[in-house]
Length: 253
Image (cartoon, rainbow, N blue to C red; front, side):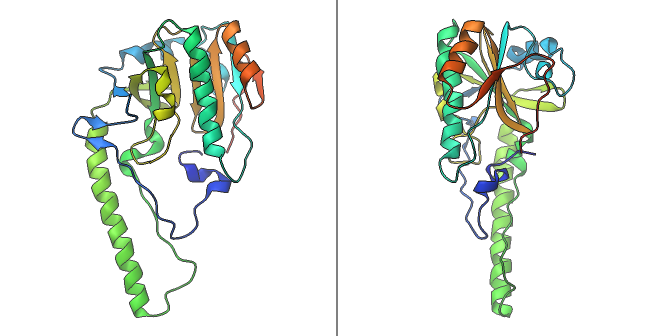
């Protein structure tokens, strides 16, 4: 199941690699990006559940069944370097092209799955070899304790701030809701990460199209007009194909 960068096999950190944190917590709450703000309520997302008519595990259970065309954009092929930047570019393509197919490019909604564990993060420190002596064992235990204390402090800050964000439910998922212009796509980040991270769902305020991915796969599924999805397919740098409501959602680990 995907929930962190390290679920990509070519991005596993080595032991003792320090984890970077950018808590993104201010008195006003968690910032998912400099141009993104918490929604006032979950109302702008309530239409989604009402429009999902597909069977579990199908495209129609992920993308509202309101669009004349649906496209699957595959994630970039695994590469040692630069994969995350290529994945960001895929989302930026959808947002950039999509800005021409909506009357509300300055107001879009970005939903982030709460199961990423922002307020319950746990890191582990390990060593390949046993301690050489008692002093080394104590040094390692002190390092672990510092890490545990830092995690507790971090989670204590992030948890209450996240509570101020409205959330909405879809089958087996709950999401935080934030908003901003489509141009803010490349600014989006998670509370505990320095770099860009993708939204799980996003759509313009006029609902002219909708895009979604999930913790269980990396592909992006887009519903919209034929003109929009065809232009996306023409510009996409990764494989893509048109899909139907009943098509199965393959797991991509």
